[in-house]
Image 1 (cartoon, rainbow, N blue to C red):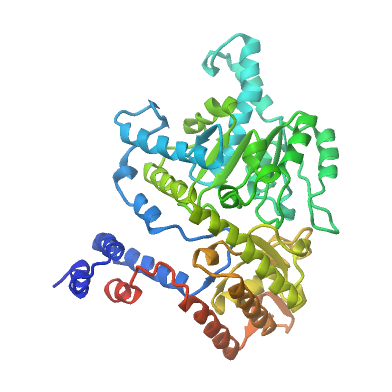
Image 2 (image 1 turned 90 degrees about the vertical axis):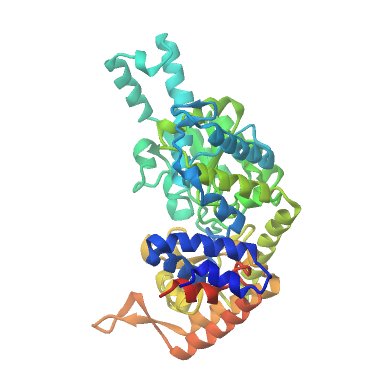
Length: 499
C-alpha cells in the first residue's frame, strides 16, 4: 500500500509543489502515531478556508513560519539567556535566540529585545517583575548593603516581599477595552498590584488624556500601562510619556494588538510606543503575523532585568518558536509587509464605513487601526447571539463588551471585528463593503431564540436555512478568489488524512 507522500508525488506529473510535499510529509509522520490529530489539522485548514476570519486578534502566519516550528529545536532545554544558560549544549539555541532578538531590535528600533515569552500574559508578567526588580528590589538590596536575594535574612526577605505586593498599577479598564492582564480583578495582575484602572469617556468612547493625567497624579502608580484589546483608535504615546514623567511612573505599553502596524510603519512618531515607553510588550501572532508567542522591547537600562524572565516567571524557552519568531520578524522588515500593514488600516476604515452605512453604531464612530466594535443591540441581539449567527453563515468574529456594557462581559452588547486576516488573504476595500453587506444581511435575518417560557434567551438564535445558504454563497464567492495557502491541495489532504 502506497504512503500519502508516495501518492502525492505520483500525482504530480513531474511538477512538484515543494510546500505541498513538505506538508504531506509532515502530516504523514503525525498520522503514523495519531491519525486523529492529522485529521484535525486538515479539518482546521478546511474550516479556515471556508470562513471569513474577522477575529481582530487572529491572522495567518506563513508556511515558512510554520515550518520553523516543526523541528528538533523543541527538544533542547535552554533556561537562562544566550551565553548564560543553566544547561550545556545550547550553542544553536543561542544562535536562534540572538538572531530573533536582533531582528526585533532592528525592526522596531529598540535598545533591547527579549524573545523568550510564550504568550501575551507571560510577557506582561516578565515585564511587571522586571520593573519590580529594578524599582523595588535593587534599591532595597543597595540600602541593605547586599548584592543578592540569597544574602537577605528571612525577615528582610519578608519585608521585601511585602513591598513587592504594595505597588500600584494604572491600566485601561477591562470593561473599556483593556486586557485581562492590565489589572483586571479576575487576573493575577490585580492580585500582584493595587490596581487603579482608568476608563474612556462615556460620551465619546475615547481616551481622555487630561483625565488620565489627573488620576495618575492622585494615584502615583509605579507603572502607567497603556495598550488595548478592544479600542479602535490610535494612542498618543508621547502624551502618556509626559503623564508618566509627571507622576513618576514607569511607562509600559502592551502593543500586542497593533504591533504589526508599528512594525509596518503605519504608527510612527507620537504613535510609536517603542520611541516613548520604558518597556513594550507584544504577542507575535496577531498583526505581527508570526507564531503564537510574545516578546519584550525595552530601554537598555531594563535589559538585565528582562533577561531574568527565565527562571523568574518563565519555564524553558521554546527554541522552535523563537526560530519561527525570527522568520516572522524578517518577513515584517520588508516593503511588502509595510504595504500589507497600510492595507490593513485602509480595509478597516472601509469596513467601518460599510457598517455605518447600514446603521450599525460603532464605538468612537469609526476606527484608526485594525479593529472596530459594533453595537449589535440595534438588531435586537446580544454579542453572543451575533457571534453564533455569523459563524453559522461562515464569518468568524467574537462577542465583545462595549464600554460600560449593560449586558456584561459574557453576553455583551457588541462584537469585535478586524481586518488583518482578510488583508493577508489579499482582500481590498471593495471586498470590505461586501463583508459589511453580508454582516448586515445575517444579523437582520437573525432573531433571539426563546426560553421554554417564551421569553428571549440571550444565548439562543433563530435563523432560517435560506438566510444561512444565501450568506454562505456570498462568503464562498469572496473566499474563492482569496484562497488560504493556495499551495496546499485540500482535496488531496482530506482524501489521505480525514477518515
